[in-house]
Length: 112
Image 1 (tube, rainbow, N blue to C red):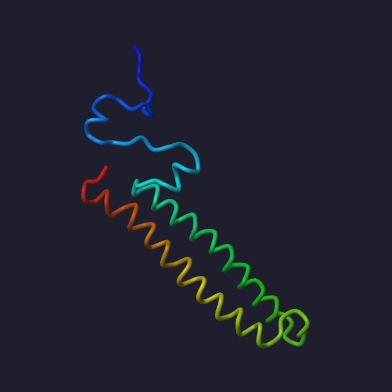
Image 2: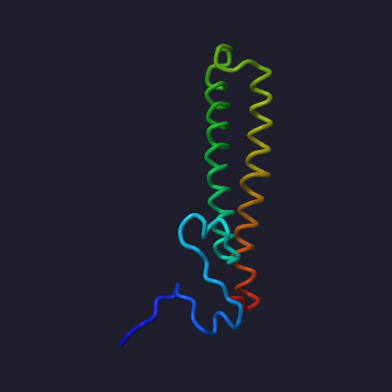
């Protein structure tokens, strides 16, 4: 029994206008598949979660020794505190919600 590879373009694919997605990084960055787009949103949000965690770590280190002003000055502390909040809300929580909805909602309405 011979099974055709899924990446070869067949006769009906050319008639119906279906296009074969490229493999690798180009395939991920140029995809129109809602599941892959949701995964990309999720991975990006997790990368920003690490950045926000490093900001939180710097804040906690400064709070451990408040008299040590060589590590973070009060102005930089305020900026870092604001950056941490902005990062966690706008670059982590909201993209994770978008990733979840982009992955799940099309499946709920019957997309492939």
